[in-house]
Length: 271
Image 1 (cartoon, one colour):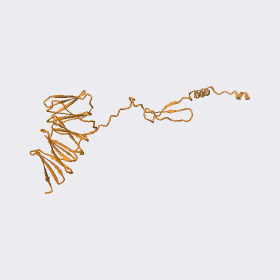
Image 2 (cartoon, helix red, strand yellow):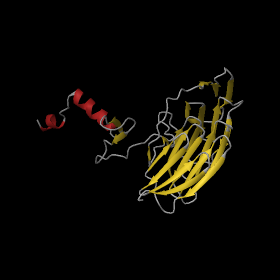
Image 3 (cartoon, one colour):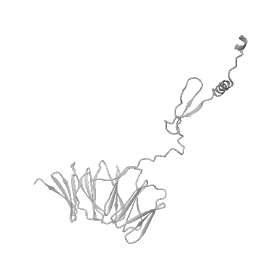
Image 4 (cartoon, one colour):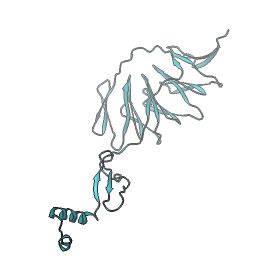
């Protein structure tokens, strides 16, 4: 009887299950966790105490990982001082078409002016009035109805720009410089900002008004002449461009620029 007990045999199915356990027991089994981000895999070890490994992140060269470009800010400039200019209706008399690695401008007389953008990344473009401008990572470009080619101005690795486009002039402002496009002369003028910031910009016909934290600049586009008025630590709160003069208001003081005399006149408004 004792011999029968000692020689008792387990069922075959139970022996087969034990055999599978012994065979696979030394191998880890991969288990995907659906609650984790795609590509995250944890390991479950069937030998000893359960443990998990850190998520396996995709390799940087994995084609499934999206490439995030560097942030490049170009915004439309808004005047800090109130612009009270009564602008007339302005019809845009120029247009461009973006082609394959090129921009083709079509002037009012039907002339086509092309510029190759091969090797450049266009970040901003606009047509208004008599001109069009383009900003790439390397250049600022302008064309007008009196152009024979796109006029190029060089920028120097700055990422943040503010843009203002007028009827006859366009302004591209960085933290360090102002790039002014003159549609009459098809020329980019560079104005340095030394310890000052741009506050306002306006263009009416052939006159441009620029207000910074330290001065007023009036530019005649036809002659490229510049006229400057120091603000003497005062602040311009409102300005207005008219046909014969430009008014700049600073509290109880007014600076009037007369087109005929091309000079600033200071007026005390408390009298």
